[in-house]
Length: 474
Image (cartoon, rainbow, N blue to C red):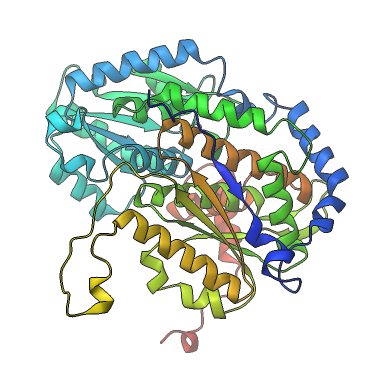
């Protein structure tokens, strides 16, 4: 292990605070302290219920030795027998694996020759666009491909439609033994996929019943694709455990996830900052922003409190990439509405360093770059963006990963999950359901003609909505 693998990630909230960005726009430390009692109750509620209800994800950094051993064994078998590994899933079943792969492997992993890659190519098929399915089948040899089907319910239309297409092709092109090309990741006790897996004798891994999809990256959902692609899953879990320890105090100023939850709560509820822009200054962390967007939006965007009172709360997460989106979005962030918090993801030390060559000496505004590094340039641009936001009275914060490795990524995942749980408590909403998503699913199945009584009722209900008017269609 690298000597700095045990370093903690750092949350710097200076530019969230009013004594830095100005009392008109920032958060006063007194307001943070004023929430000490509420924050303590939130922290205690989460901690006392860990491992139960929908808080099973809090125990994932621990007690998985047997599961991890099985994952490593299955991963070794995949690496030995297949050239390609395809994840069939959506939502948390896809965003997490994509984020981890982007963060911890070569940015052009699939394009490397096999001897440099060291494992099978990875494709994460997180949509049902027919052109995307056709494109996948154009670039893989199905006889040399293993498919990881991930759905807790076994009734996810997107994933199970992919399953039906792929298994039909496997039966036709592989024939006897096609089942060896499938790894199923699903609920231990219920659902269609567990029945199919046992019927067909697929390799089988379980999603704990107390772990929801968007909190599932540290269970087999995320660990299997990571292990197949050579990522150190033990270090990921160790990093998550280290962050868990930091989050066990009810002292706001000592618990990074609790501080994050309190600050975002104040930003939302008191300052009208209903948008959080996650802006990594590293291509490796680009998809971590996508993963966070689902976690934060689906958990906190709720219409009622746990007591049923209408509130319609939530902070809209969106993503930007430094430095790319300085040239597309920053104008809005510096001069548009005061409704955003910018969260920078910073890398302390990149895994590569590139010196900028000397040249163009006749052009002073180009020549000065010679001898500097891309590393120093990207950090200078992050600091410049931070300063521009500061000058405009806009709140920002920075999460620094000393380096991007499995240990720091494990910390980052768990930090965001804990902050989400604490924020849900402060907002007094259920952070672990998604009724708005369920409504969409039911309506979709009704449109497709599912004969289940529930969907038939929804189909009738949908017929009664106002008809579209021609004058509004151009």
